[in-house]
Structure formats: C-alpha cells, structure tokens
Length: 73
Image (cartoon, rainbow, N blue to C red):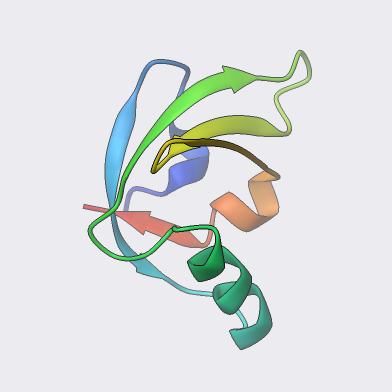
C-alpha cells in the first residue's frame, strides 16, 4: 500500500482513498484531496516533516501523520 507520506520531492501520485477519522477526512476533502486528484510533492522540511504538496493549483503543507492516511493508486 502506497501512501502520500512516502512521496519525495518531484514525485506525484493519484489519490485512491482517504482513511482517517471523519473530521480530518472532511478537512482534507475541503482542501481538494479527494479520490482521483493528482498530488505532487514539492518540498520536504529539513527534518522530513512537514512536506508541501501541490494540489489543484494550491500548495498545501501536511504532517506525516495526516499524509499517511491518504492512499495512492
């Protein structure tokens, strides 16, 4: 199973599903992270967390705890 948290800068993937509690899932959906969305990792912080992702024209920073709940195709 491949998750968003394993992407390195300049790698991309397509969201298959989001598996987390309902309130966090709603927040991620509001950011545009829904099944079928292409996401590109743009930047990783020096210590590895958080990472910045390009999603539907916006740059979004996510912690590894949150991005590990996003399953990629």
